[in-house]
Image (cartoon, rainbow over all chains, first blue to last red; front, side, top):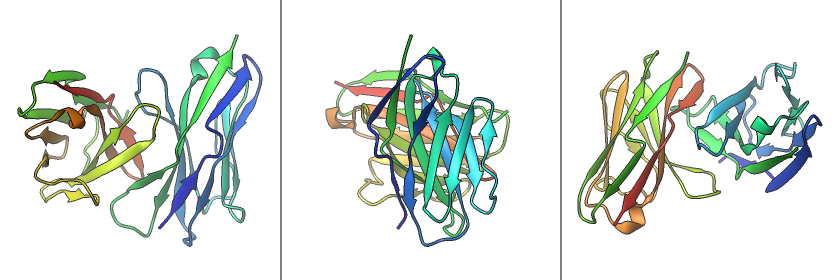
Length: 116
Length: 113
């Protein structure tokens, strides 16, 4: 079974600076999807970014980018020019392409605090 | 696009009663929806996968008779917590799958007195 590990329970960043959240995963599959979701205090889960494993190019969405290292099974999220609204819990998630049903395997989450 | 709604957002009920939570995909059709439970500052725990027109698939340890799931249409799934007890108090979140991505509802906070 696949597992997702987020080793940083909490992180802090100064407003306007850059922060990187780490995520590693364990799988024997070659094709899969990886996601970062954000859960602000409202508790609404919001998709931040998505990466297909067959794509070598790292996904980017405005201030959010990933560093996808397939061989190392690492999928870190970089937030540039951090804003107060980025404060949230961030979850890394894995989705198998082999297993039917579109299920996600989540990491434990990282709480990001943004200091003004 | 890809908006998922959940109703109600909060519900308080007495022990022994049943509560129904609705999950709707507003701008897309979802063959598959998911129900999660989340405790404070913890990750999401998948309870069951709901497939339109067929029986839900429950995760190990989830009581099928307590958490009834119905996926009657391509835009609606419901979770009914039957004979609720205080230990069922939690935050319940649904999601709907559009192609390869899950989109989440805003969640329902259930409090059982």
